[in-house]
Length: 487
Ligand code: 5AD
Ligand code: SF4
Image 1 (cartoon, rainbow, N blue to C red):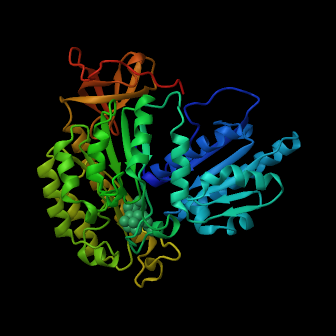
Image 2: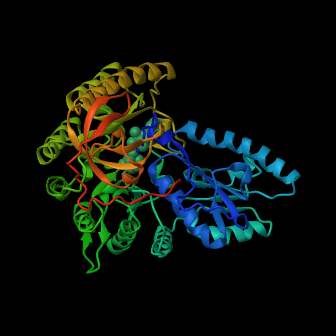
Image 3: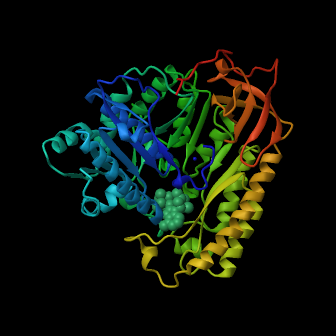
């Protein structure tokens, strides 16, 4: 979602892929990723698509021949951050031009989709605007830019994108980190009245089972132990199997659980209406399906849920959680909340707090409502003043933070499996992930990176747990450490 940025969508990452190699003859691409994990996945795939064109990833903006900002449009601030970043890039581009070096600038992702040509108008340094369904065409688009044209490509052709990306993913890769994302579904048909996703990412499209299995096998072969299946509405997955049948997410997870080496499966983000019996049963049956579920509810008020077009009531949400907890008693629940949706009264907000108290979340993300042009919410009456939104958000976050602390504290003294993912800040320290998606810090030899170890939780920090290797209780079936790249 990570070492938990304050909000999931506000995370910014520089996606230099693991296989960055120093080769001065190659051209360099700098990709900055805003927003959700799907953008992280997309950025990695963009770098894959550009590799045969002679590009290698760099984390150094000054060194880049090509800069791509992979943007997020879910809330206003995110788009504004992109424009201010373009201002900084303009200065770097000018400095490079003085040294006789060129720099192409592209804006990809949902801001690109939503704003199109407006981006190059506001920021003339932008050579290329590429919507999220078009980045498999990057090589051809770059060719056009080189011939002096400005490019805006915002067509929706998800099938073509998935086909080309699958071909790319099937190529052997040297090494991958031990945890990876895999997009299985894109777009959304739900049309919640606050949300731009159905407009920026388009209608729901699921990848075929065989494409996903091939990519997952490829990942497992290159050292990935944990795969998180991604989709804007991932549990609406309905992909075609080889015999022409349509599989839901539960069935897909069962198939992926058979892949050797994939010891941990997760999926995000889900809609309560699409949590079907088969998926709930998968939580009961599959040892590799981690006991963590991100199931946004947004509000605890029936009136607001209706105005948001969420298509369920608070009681239906409670009943659903009862069934999920019955199937997987150990499950950690996470959610998203919006405060200050149009028409939200103090009582509606109280209902949200009451829902949170009843559910007891392990973690959650929360946001002030942001009016998104083109969505029904933007023009609704009774918009809530900014200061009221801020007050409500502070109260809500204090409650969620209390619950997160209590959940973390309840892990103290437990022995649990931890996937050791990377070196920690201090020498001799590694950082891993608990089954409940909490970061765990512990002292352990570096060659254990990539393995799953039994760890005793000995202390609790504000955002992470502290553990100790539980000698003699190696939970890694093969007990073989698969090293990850040095980066
Ligand atoms: N304003 C505030 N939060 C929003 N989200 C989506 N759209 C908006 C908006 N207009 C939040 C929702 C969603 C998460 C990804 O972002 O909580 O689940
Ligand atoms: Fe947006 Fe999620 Fe609602 Fe789809 S289900 S419209 S992605 S909030």
